[in-house]
Image 1 (cartoon, one colour):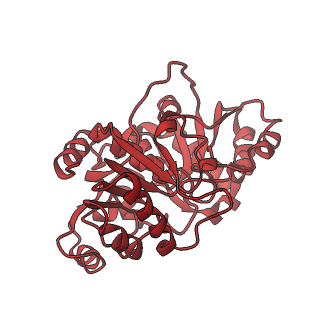
Image 2: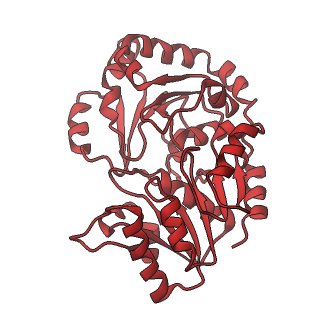
Image 3: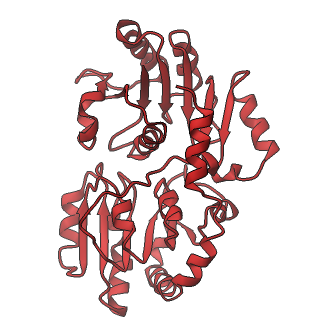
Length: 337
């Protein structure tokens, strides 16, 4: 049995689930369970209803990785002995893995940071900083993990959605997104400035774990050219029919790279900390800081220029090292479950 342990919800967002969902599809997994903190976080996961396990009771919550590991071990002992554990979490690292490893066959860790310590058998990190053999970084990772760990590094092992099932086509000029739990009201002034240039067709995606979505509806109510989509099952369906994508620098940057979609990225949190050269490796040449959103006039002008030069940008993106066929082959070849 494959047991996933992931972060999910308003605080953690959707990225961890998006990565393991990609792994499930690429490896064509059938028998698996997904362990999350509480059922209240699982409202978006309707396709996984019968595979969700809540680790905490209603009146309990996460304290630390050691306490979490004890609960998880009890779960393994009761139902899932000799399982393979696949973990994607910023909260659970070396201590959790070392405790749990005694009660499972293998631990596969998914991470996009290079700072965390691990005790895993297989370590997956699709961070573009590994797009070329960086011996210093690899040495650093080996020191932070146990002996004989298998390292699957860089965009050759990228985990993101490529499926496109939607029948209703939504054509647009711009799509704005801020991740599964990010506040899209940050884009309001930029959209106002764009509207002064022209009433473009704009789509605003509200992630499934955005708490203030009702407030956001009110904020954008007067924008007749803005279509709001709340909790889409797959943003690929929306990105495929737009011209420019404006987003936080999360998992969605791999999806827009895959589509060769000109993208303006904003580093919204401390985990989105790649250098410009690393973003360029996957075809992204426009990446700004969150604070730059205050310069709404300049941002709107940049988006306008990107629209007018999108063919040239797409040509530049053709140099991206992201290759979905290679990714699938690499994952199937390297991960034995």
